Length: 215
Image (cartoon, rainbow, N blue to C red; front, side, top):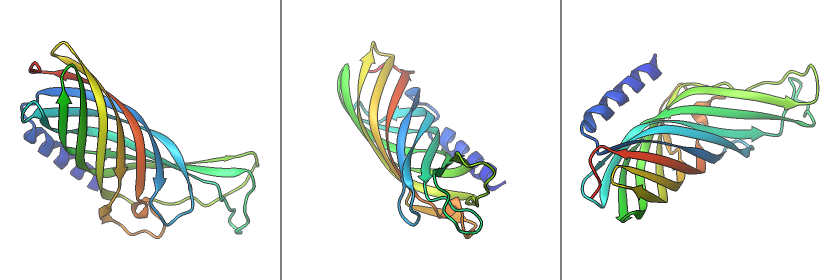
């Protein structure tokens, strides 16, 4: 229920704030993520996908929002059974999926070929927490982490380049860094995703359609 209320509120605020966008688009890619601290795990590879809405203040400055599904993955290679014994040749891949509403200020320079920088923050709500055990050992039992709902705040930054085709369509390619800073809501379970904070670095490909022609 909490996730539905937060998602609805964020969606309404987003639509009201960008009633007349200059461009809409889609963006997706891969990110390499790790936990900031607290648990000894290895980084994992995950993906993200989203819809972007941009409104330009002028030809150099724009505001961006939208909605994104962001995944973070980590690998636990120290797997133990209920008795505390380490299981050899076993690992657990844990994947978290968040829905986020980015609030971004962007800066662009150039013409047909351009460069851009984006800085912002992304409130995100945990949608799912999946764990997969990979092992050759049959019939073993292990304890998985539990998770609790949380609303996390994540500063992020992106730099990239793009190419404008005509005055209506552009393709962008950028590198994005994301850093979960703190949680506004968390049930404080002993072992929960609410206590896990991710950092990630990824590559995103975007396609943007301009409702109003670019100058």
